[in-house]
Length: 289
Image 1 (cartoon, rainbow, N blue to C red):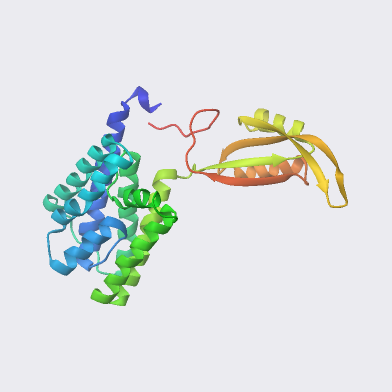
Image 2: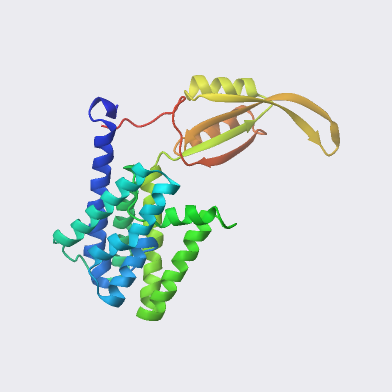
């Protein structure tokens, strides 16, 4: 429905600007005044700012430039230009907007600084850019070594927090780890939301009734795989054909689906898998205005 009101580029711009404002708020009102850190390039920028007292607005731009250049090759040039514009926008925001310091309580700073930072980064990602180039580095490095992107990001962040522990004290580093964790959870929530999709596979001898209830009762789209069931230890040679049912639901609907299948066939084999992104098909989405 959103295309009836605003074009995609306008929606992306709103997401990006909102992300810049939230990130600026997190930095100026929570993290910078209290010498706290985040992970990734933002953490590196905050660390340089604290150690060498260089304006955080300038450091943010300089620290991200190598990763933006890398993003032009690893992702595409459009992504790189959007990211450059977003980083410059964040620097301008930090330089000119007089954000007030909200609190000096370390626990509140670590939690809410992380929440607002995560919301900002997440909104920027939804807008098609990045306020932190560390994932681009992980993508580049992951093609050359055997570690996963998550492991590379974790390793980089461990180095950041170790330096912070040695230079600024262990308590600050520990609180900063909490900030990073809170930010990462907030990013996931903003990107995936309450409607994070889950793939559900159902293997049941009552597959016909399961299919009918999923489509007619829940209004879900289904895909059918042809398979065989049986192959038990005591009767390995005995098997029968079965329709393997696959569908995609939101995690809010998962319990209802499990109950529905259990009512039909308590012995049904049901397993789930997390789906990071889904589009098209018969997917229920909340209307966005």
